[in-house]
Length: 202
Image (tube, rainbow, N blue to C red; front, side, top):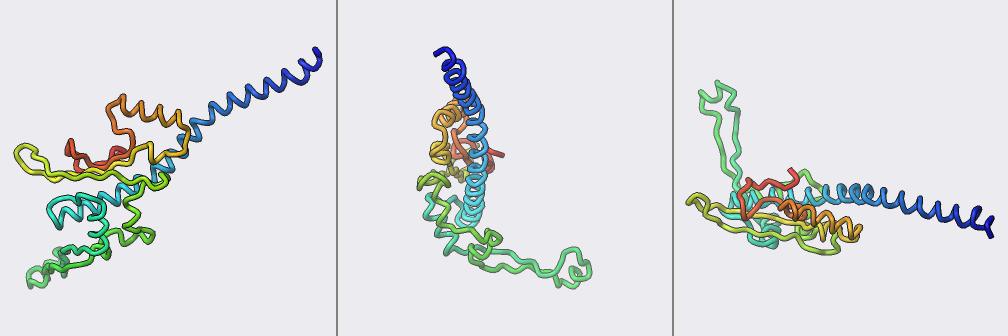
């Protein structure tokens, strides 16, 4: 019995404890690696929303109130583009009044995010990895120093973005953000404090 304990049971207990220790060390490492990858995709999404919201505001003088409006703006909207003919650096052309500007209307989808072959406006509404949760988007017109200022924000909560990952580490992350008075997730813009549409990751 003593030999069984020494040669079989004790080594099994040691191996089990070693596994638990290694796993407890590696779990946060895996969590942070996966979190970084997911955040990169979410940040790209929020940057796309910001790009379209700024364009929408340039056309309508306010931000899109709901995601459907933003998607429709991309798919069907038009923008006024100022095109310069000739170069202001060419003094001879300037002297001969050959440099001029033309205002033309272009489809939004032919103007914005054209370098992104994978871009689909319909994907703006859905948080990656969430199983279908939607981006929380708000827009308001707020009086700041006596001036009406259009504001918007788009939010992706960690609870949606990191769905399916280690629950306790997710709880800890949310608590840490809340304790620091920071949004527990990724956010671009703000309807509370004008921030020039900055993202909270920047």
